[in-house]
Length: 231
Length: 88
Image 1 (cartoon, each protein chain N blue to C red):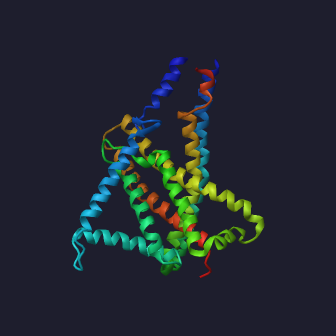
Image 2: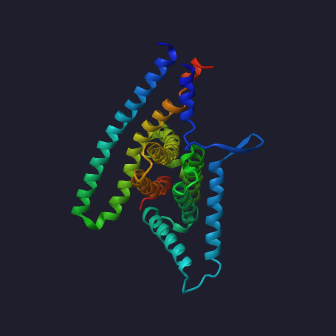
Image 3: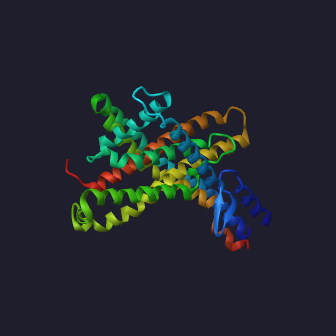
């Protein structure tokens, strides 16, 4: 019966869970963290190269980056009643980072960083702090705290519970979607391997983009809920 | 049947049931939300962008229930806390 347990732990070595590469003191550096560093390097390098010579008649690279940020700005402008450029830099960064993280797992040899609960919790914590910081920045401490009593004081506990649960839901949603995509791909490769995983990988591609979009949109909606402006 | 067999059998069955039941409800809900959204876009195409945005947010919230079921199934299968009591 013990060998059954060994079988169960052998399944754990499916290549979708993060593995520790080396450790600095008590902190384990997993391969998902290294992939995150790689994405950061690529994104920063690309942005740096394409924004060095800004001009009225943009190059192709500048045009792509401008289009991306105009799309982000338009989305923010539609949802938030405040100046969009307060939110666009951090939200755009979050969006691009999550989008790249979701898609990088399609390259062979790289592991999806967002299929690691630690990464998605870090993103969710950023989203959580954004909600409070923008709420306080736009209406002051008093005005921000007053939004917890809307519509009545009776709902205060539910507001407080929702603060926690929606952050956890944000993290677990991204994690679950990405991990399920990876697992389906790996299990199918184990069974058939030839051509059959392709449609599932395409679906995973679409889901990665949609989940990044949803993460940003939900953050926006939470910020809008914290700002509480009557338009 | 020793204790490990019982636990593993129960885990496999309950993981399958968790996904089956946990996927059924959200799937119905997603279908209903999508069909209602398509109906209203067909009736008012100019409100399409706003309806789609609300639809995405709503679908994300519905879908998270299915994701919870998936995470529970993962915990049962890969990080089962009960096996640790039997196998030291």
